[in-house]
Amino acid sequence: MRRSLPHGTGRARSVDYGDRVKIALMDSGIGLLPAAAAVRGLRPDAELVLSSDPDGLPWGPRPVEDIARRALATARAAVAHRPDALIIACNTASVHALPVLRAELEPAIPVIGTVPAIKPAAAGGGSVAIWATPATTGSPYQRGLIREFAAGTAVTEVPCPGLADVIQWADGPGITQAVAAAAALTPADVTDIVLGCTHYELVADRIRAAVGRPVTLHGSAAAVAAQALRRIGATPEPGAAPAGKPTVVLSGTAVDTLPPEALEYAEAHRLLTTVPTR
Image 1 (cartoon, rainbow, N blue to C red):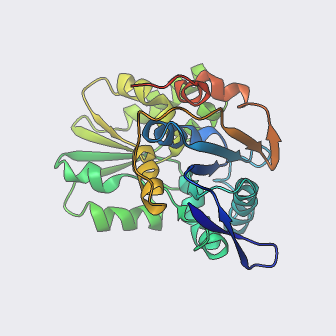
Image 2 (cartoon, rainbow, N blue to C red):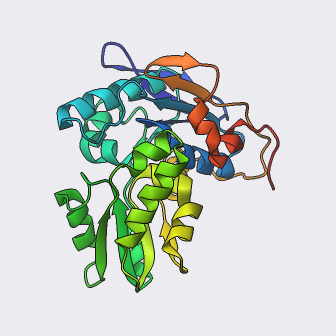
């Protein structure tokens, strides 16, 4: 597989990768884990680069210009490892920095953003709740997605203050409290819940338990993983021999392993295993 990578002069150089697949993912924190695990499920042999910004998280409360600046730095740290594609595994960065990232990196490297799964949730015909950060809830961006993909559907926007933060730091009691608060704001007739922050997929089981009735949860990880492979012309090969452990980059510095809080989640351990799953 041959890709042209950004050069220091703004021009591109061509690099031959052979048949291997390398996918980079970026987020402010560990919200990239679900998408990374989804890529590993589709292509166990894919090399992964996980670039995050623990020095600058959370990104949500920052000014738009600062979000774009930090997202670009995090993307550049990932691209230095020569991936075939870059997944922005972060709703906030996808909203505020996707044009900047694509302007710098494409067409040399495909950039795949993350969009809340409102369209598939609304397609079920039931009542939908969108769990998202307070900054996203009620935003023009989210309201636009609702108009485009859920017109005529009963939609409730549920703000989840602090939920991404307590998930980031694996704060068990904090997760319980934040999930319970969001569940209390979710109408009893809701059949589908959109997880509008990539961190939320890490606690999907706890969300189901807190809601206390059958609901379908809609995350974005599987869709962005599949899109990344499509963009580079790679086919899913779930039975392929697994690659080694991912390359981990924290605020621009390569480290030996995932941060301790990541290891509290099953998705992280799927990335660290070298035994193929069938």
